[in-house]
Image (tube, rainbow, N blue to C red; front, side, top):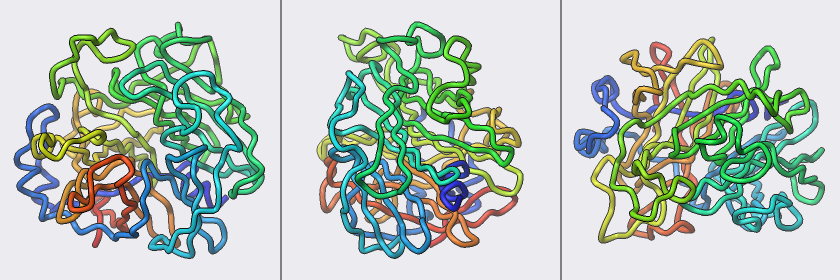
Length: 370
């Protein structure tokens, strides 16, 4: 149940700008020069020197487990968040059983523990396309060697069930699972196409509560395109309306509030000579609600579906484009963790590092600490 508090249901993360910068309502879709000028006001990342992408972390007794993108989903362990992290194996023994996307290197895993069973939710897809699926594997231990791949939970683009709303207009990647204090379970997913959605899960936690009537909620959306669409965009590979850069959602809980975190902006396949305008690279944003189903609003009261969102943490110093975030309850504090790039090292996918910051809540809003 320690993972239940750390990652299972109540995960996600923190806020790192000064009070003045935090109070600004950065309008989604603008170039966010103000954010670019305010980067020095974010606290530095606590660095680990551990390469990772789309991390998820749980604590089991005195051991920390890190799961991230890699062949069959890498597993690392460490005695503390700071490391040193040791690669001990992978979740899956072979390729995902789901017949689509990159089956050898599933994306964006999220791991939770409930009543002695560990659940690893993962994505299979092709970059830039929404012919995707969320899968799940289970085990009675957090380490490698005993995971069973159950396959598809939901899918979009093609395949059984993809013709039912909202799967007709969304992208089934970046899963995160919330278990509420009452024991209700929800799966959050989505990237770019129409933003972030949530559906109830069934009691087995490996299937939707309903396959025909998903009872889906749209929780967050970037209504403005941050660029021009590809001329080859066809709504399966490429959005004809342009890149609505929002993804990687994660839900946490603290003191009566549910917090919906997400990554906003561009993160991957960046080029040193053509980086996004300052403020349009990855940053971590948040909204909150007293219901796990939303609506989630930012500090100014703007619904995340309408483009709201508090800037939680952004580029600063050696930390560039932080995102792919989660939150773990570690002792009596919440800790925000994420991947980020160090431009002096490299900006390729495999160059990303694991970073983290403890959180403090002020007036109910999380703030990242140095």
